[in-house]
Amino acid sequence: MPQGRQQEPAAAANKSNKKDPPLIQCADLILPWLTPLELANISSTCKALSQISKSITLQRTLDASRFLENHLIPFLNPNNQHPYAYFLYTPSQLLPSQSPLRQPWGSQLDRDSLGRHHGGSACKLNESWEVLRGCDSELETPRRVMGESGKGVCGCDCEGCEEGGTGWEFWGLEEMGIMTECGPGCGCGLECSNRLTQRGVLVKLKIVRDGKKGWGLFADQMICQGQFICEYAGELLTTEEARRRQQIYDELASSGQFSSALLVVREHLPSGKACLRINIDATRTGNVARFINHSCDGGNLTTVLVRHTGSLLPRLCFFASRNIKEGEELTFSYGEIRFIEFSLCLLTKVVARLADASAINEQKNTQQEYKDSFR
Image (cartoon, rainbow, N blue to C red; front, side):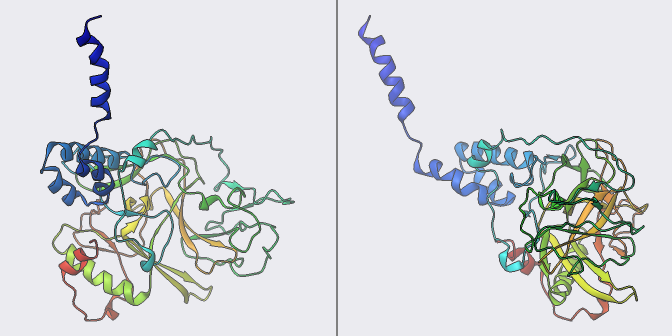
């Protein structure tokens, strides 16, 4: 064999062992932490960084949840050049002090995780709500989620779950149901069938951009009446902080280019007096529920306050109020709402209204202050 051909494999091996420049090696560790604007700016510096930026952008469009949910939740945007909405993801509620300033999204680790795919189980239709079996341990009578009709409470007979304790009482919550699940005070784990809403998103969803309404959350499979969709995750705020942020959001929304996701939930006693107020802000840090739009006719989702044994604050969760077809948008009624731009049910810029907005303090905040909170 000619000597030149003998050297070809060695040359190919040397070429394959050649390392990328240090900048390129570090790029996959650094670029996933960047915002879309920062990513666009750095992609214009060289061809290699441009290719990495494109790969990260593609990865972000494939899954909004950063692989923190059971299924990929993709963005679909055929209308303009913005392929995805940028925000920080949390699958559950968290305090502002726990909210990260940055979050990696689109790293090599994410790309290696693309093969992970959890299959969904078939659903069964059950009356007006999906019947939950509760803990398998000696539970004779299944309990169920409670809707407006007030037909029973979901709970369990686990050791440590004592009926009559905090969270077991039921009273009407206007159009909101209430249920109780196992929690920190129970001896069971996440495999317990009475921890349905604690396992993340179990149905296939997608986030689609409409030319008029903006982003919306859609079913990517048939969803049956009574199935759990997701919880409304975000930062838990004090009322004072909620008012402060709402004032900032109102100022930003006046430009017509901003929509907040601050939701205020009030739990009422039978007398009608509010006994608990929860402020959940998914504007900067949240989950897929931040994309659920308002519907004037009540929508196809019902809100349920879910309490956990041993946990003080309930969580706001969404269940299908009827059968939902694949490709159908998921919507619910925001209750009292204020229109930045009145457009009937299109509601691109709807803000959940604080009932005591008149008590908002006079502190002035600039748009730059809000932008700085993302840095």
